[in-house]
Amino acid sequence: MKSQANKRYRIVQDAIEARLLDGANRREKAEHIHAVIAGATMQWIVSDGSVGLSNFVLQRLDMAINLND
Image 1 (cartoon, rainbow, N blue to C red):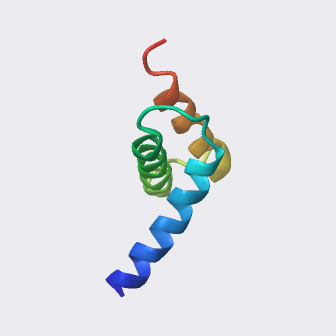
Image 2 (tube, one colour):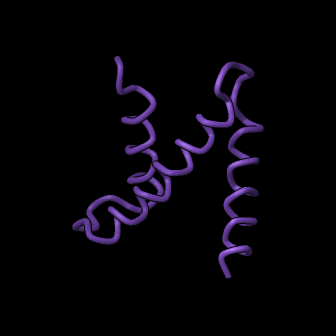
C-alpha cells in the first residue's frame, strides 16, 4: 500500500513540477505545494464548511505562495 501511495504522490508532484517555471529548487517547491494542498484538504474537513473545498485549498495555496509579501 505504501508503494502505491508513493507512486501516486510522485505522479501528483510531477504534474505540479511540470507547471512551475524553471528555476532553483523546482522539485522542492512542487513537493511543498503538494504538502499545502494535502494539508488544506485535511483542514477543510474540520472547517465550518462556509467555503467550498476548491476555494479553501486555493486560499491556502495563495497564502503559502505569497507569505513573504
